[in-house]
Image (cartoon, rainbow, N blue to C red; front, side, top):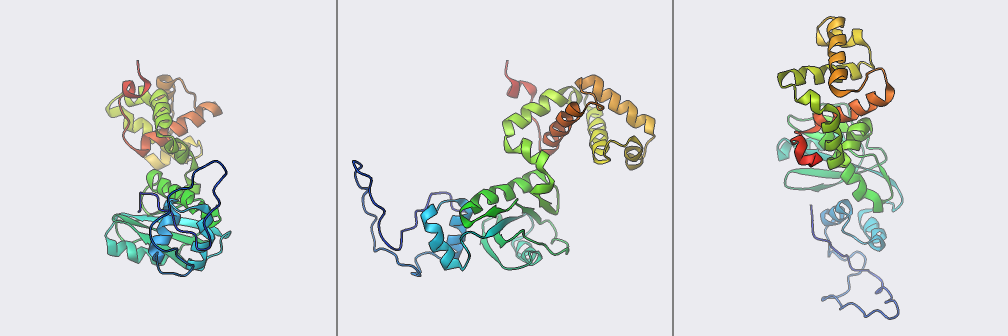
Length: 270
């Protein structure tokens, strides 16, 4: 996707210069009129996705693309797999979409809530879905959310709205990392035992706090689950029967599962 800001020329007239401020030097070349092929549709979609167009140019771009300025849009992001597999994955998006391809993926601007067909994704391809945005001017914001969905989710289709706790800690990577280290640091320091404890906590949370369901999913006895949870409580000082503590444990776990954590000293400082 383009990285350098691109200012699209206004098709009607130059913007007025505020009093007391020198006029900016004129850009070389003729003034582009609406409909002039100075920007390809692919480029225009890219400008919307990366936010490098001026707000005043959005109506012009909307007219070029045949889209309502104030419509409801959702951005989907494709990553992984081969280029051919990502192209094939586009068929899962129901309804028309405007696509922009990059070296490693693709983004689509979809009208509405981006309904998807229930077909499986091609091998290796992941699909992230943003939260949606009102108006073309906010498409870039939802593109970042689609990227975040890919960052916090697993394989297959990942809708950000279904992973908000993980997105919360991933949105501020430094704070999320600090939370994970402060809450789960003692668990992570147990070495080989850490993964067993984390997986038990993760399964228990997914089971809505049911020890029996957690034990069934892990293939162990209920007492084993209870003992592991008590071990986590002793290590972290967080009780699993105290709602505020459970919230912190869940958020810390979401960050721990999203990627490697640095040594505690690298984040917390002296």
